[in-house]
Amino acid sequence: MNDEENLDIDLDGGLSATNEQEFDFYWNYRIVNAKSENNGEDWYCLKEVVYYSDKPSSYGNPCTGSEDMESLRDVWRMMGLALEKPPLQEEDFEKETDE
Image (cartoon, rainbow, N blue to C red; front, side, top):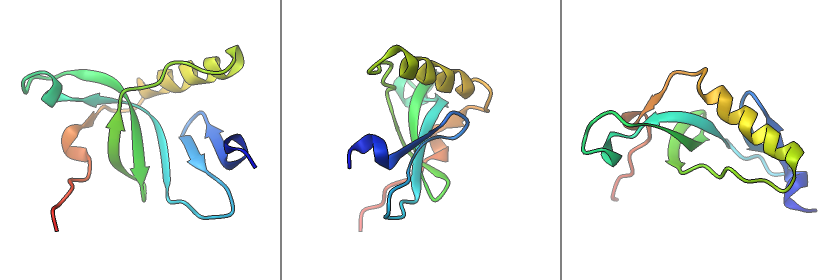
């Protein structure tokens, strides 16, 4: 079984794991106000956001490439959907705690 068989692309919701094991995560593209990247001033960026239990957990820079033109079109459609949702704030993400 390859990775493509384990993943489900939903253009509205993003990418989620769908194999025999139950994973409680997914990701999508979202606009994030990453003030920490701009000396505390507003800085709206397109990011890949990972959710656990439907809560934003982490984000990173988006990958904008793909294996073929059809899947590249899907990537760009998913990125466009990010503009239709309200921006996330850095405070929306779970804070890691030292235990």
